Amino acid sequence: MQQLKNSVKNTLWVVCLLLFTAVSAVAQSGSINAFSPYTMYGLGEINTPGTLAQRSMGGVGVAARQTGMINLLNPAGLSMVSRKSFLLHFGGEGQNYYNYQTLGGVDKTSAHNSFSIRDIAILIPLYKSLGFSVSVTPYSSVGYRMMYDHAFDENDPVWGNVGRVNYQYQGEGDVTEVKFGLGYELFKNFSIGAAAQYYWGDIDRSFVMVPVAITGGGSFGEIVGQSKYSVSRFRAQVGMQWNAILTEKRILTFGATYDFGGDLQPKVTESIVGDDLYTTTVKGDTTHLALSIPRKFTVGVHYQTVKWALGFDYDYQQWAGSNSRSEMTGVNAATGTAFKVAYRDTHTFKAGIEYTPARYDVRRFWKRWSYRAGVRYGSFQQRFDNHDLQEMALTCGVGIPFKFLGVSAVDVGLEYGLRGFNVDKQVGLVRQQYFKFAVAFRLFASGTENNEYWFMRPKYD
Image (tube, rainbow, N blue to C red; front, side, top):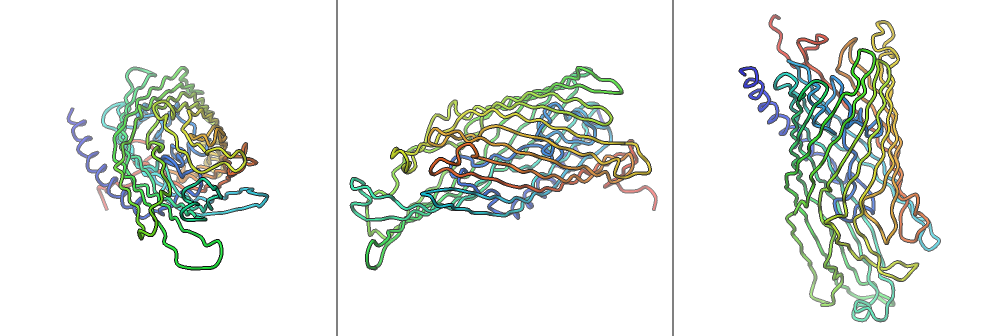
């Protein structure tokens, strides 16, 4: 019992230090960490969860149980914690977005580069088979800049009172997840876990309406509309893992998680600024996509031997459900009908593999490296004018240990993804591709395993 009290006391100090460091790091990251017209609505682009090692395997890991790994996907995996140890994970990620669109027979392209702090997490044992973790990870990102010329419509009040109008849309911001997790081995080969998730962040969206002269020149007033969404909300997750096979040669594990989700109920500040030159309504939409976390159910299987690790996960996210609201935005030039954006439920499939040639090879350092690859396929969480956007990603990476038989390592990962490739010929829709390059560090401290004494003060000089 005294050990548990001391562990809790030490953990609280470490958590405070981690949160202070993480918040400072997030505040210094770039404000635009995504660059896509598809982030114009709702929470924007949802980042793939998990550590870099998990993301390099396509994002699998709900059933993964490994020493020296913080399982950010399933809190039940935290029960796989070594006694008298401390594990720190942190890293950064660079992104390159390239958007391609054919509109009116003209090809249009845009690109954007960014860098951000990707994950900061710790894992500490509280008691035998009881692990505690806290992590700070980006949940979603918004970033877009677009222009739109209002097409002529003799019945439109904007054209009747103002004339040709140019709209400029811009948005940026992020929602960050702070996660507190507990994992416990309830009985042999069966673990359970629970996590409290705190979401916070700001998303800023704005539009500028500028009248454009048809002939001649003159002075024109512009109207600027701004909306700021401030998120601060708690949610919860539960999970389980079961070792169906556990021998010295192989391990087969099944896992599952459930995220309760719910509306984030952001605080919204809106304003429209003009010079009172016109009183015509420029944009009169009254329905908007909710900022909400979907109910999510994930199941997975993980098989590992000394050399190989294989995983498969399936995600179901109920984005629609209570989020039946939609947004009407402009007119589809091909059909002449209103362009509708609405949430849709998503199904995502992930598969990954890891290969370590000779984990205990003393002479050849590269033989101890872990090589990873994976694939992910699913749909974007929003439907655009009744068109579903398919997404896919190919991933790869390598884990390089710092020392022989050590757990501490540096991970390097690369991801190539496509979005909207199935509808890129549709008018008004964009084909997007991206590259992500990430580096992460795992620092493991233990006085009982592998003689790794990171962050520990020596008894003798």
